[in-house]
Amino acid sequence: MRASLFTAARPGGRIDRPDAGAGAIGLPQQLGFDEIGTPLFDATFVVVDLETTGGSANESAITEIGAVKVRGGETVGEFQTLVNPGVGIPPTITLLTGITNAMVLPAPRISTVLPAFLEFVGDAVLVAHNARFDVGFLKANAARLDLPWPRPMVVDTLALARRVVTRDEAPNHKLGTLAALFRTEVTPDHRALTDARATVDVLHGLFARMSSLGLTHVEDLATASDPVPPARRRKATLADDLPTCPGVYLFLGPRQEVLYVGTATNLRRRVRSYFTAAEKRARIGEMVDLATAVKPIPCATALEAAVRELRAIAEHDPRYNRRSKAPGRRPWVRLTAEAYPRLSVARSAPQVDGGAAIGPFPSRASAALAVEAMVAATGLRTCTGSLPRIPKPQANACILLELGRCSAPCVHPDTDYGDRVLRAEQVLGGNADAVVQTMTATISRLSAQERFEEAAVRRDQLLAYLRIAARAERLDPLRRARQILAARRADGGGWEILLVRYGRFAGTAVSPPGRSPMPVVDSLRETGAQVQPGQTRAGAASDEETALLADWLERPGTRLIETDLDGADGPGWSLPVRGAGRHLDRLSPRP
Image (cartoon, rainbow, N blue to C red):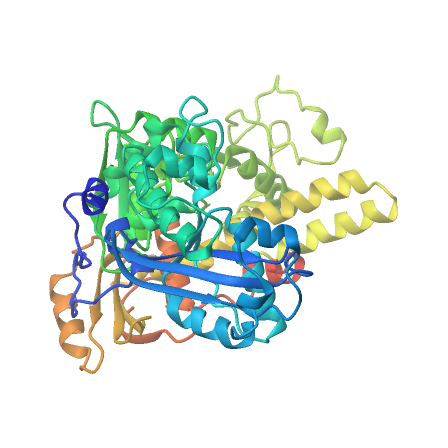
């Protein structure tokens, strides 16, 4: 019967090796249980019960330890011994347990018993009824003996029973009551081994009930007593067929629409977490309740997974994802093409030959802040009307002329306006010196006048410009590069190889440890995705994707294998000496 209880908890269609992602080259690996999740029928449990001289772990002592080791529903070992507590046993305890002072006098001390018991436990899951009591005594004694506590996973059958056994079935959740409910083979009698054997049968009965709630793995037990709707727990089977490699997962709705896109280093483990109390976001809980399937996209590396997540969010626009939506519609700031150009916030990236521009900005509000900083440094007009080269006789200037904030080309031909436009083109191109000098002088003046709120506004305007300008000067060299091949040591040995073309992820592969990576490099170069240069200033990939690649390339330990920058416009892979990044590091240091 015990084996059948565990069979009920067996998930279907297990996948025991990681699936290879696109471009992956390597050797199969044996993953540990902590990586793939341990089905209940595969786990080893040690069910323990203690008898003591009292209820306090700091003031009382252990008189008996009994434990049963089970795996797959079958008993594989037992541990039982009386323990000499070194103190007298109170009569009330003797009356309860039947253990007398004479019985424990020849027994070994806890200093001898505890190391043997911990060796018996090994790496098994430790189980007890009211585990706080039993584990508390074990940990307290280990501390007194200077024994390292192995920190096993602990399962409390009392907490599990409170989750799945209702008051209609049992008046309480004491071990004796549960033993009667589950018809255990032995009856608890306050002796350690007998009570441990009864707890084993109770544990099996609880597992049988929990399988109908979707609790089929050891990792589920950590949150089994938490308040998770049963319908949500049952959906945990959606993760059973998922691979254990890095990748992207798509939660699908009733009409196979994409509800949510995420990324994980271990697809099965991450998706399973959505069906436990570990997931506390109400909005995501709503999404999980709607989901009917999970589609995995296995990847060779975590970097590939992160890139494919961005692309999937941009493609499907899932209703439950909050970030990275519609990256192609983020605002840019550019010069208008007219007699007296001005700075304009555009809804999309301008063409490559469309003149000076900077972006993309995270929002229109941040773009507007940056425009204020650039206008202050260049003196460009801010009115939105189109002005003729020669002012109309009936034209009137606005109040900005009286405030000294505009040269008013609407009423006075501005022979110096071309110089203003030239400064603006330089600022849009990343030369931040003029903006920084103008804005810092204004901030200092306002601060000296104790106009701190106005100074804070100017600071925000300056930072809005510097952040995007620094980002552009960091990513533009990658957008111009025809090809970059780089490598870094993989966590499991070997090399992780990356191919970037025009700032876009073109492929990745993993070279096995102990072998030359060059055949993998050559293969990736030939099979990587072909990428054409971007037709707009945004490049061939989203800003987020190029930034992910830049982060990977800039990490310590990365080695460049090949770069193809020849013939590309610009200075190559470098940062400008007078660029925005230098000022941003000084004015807004990174944590």
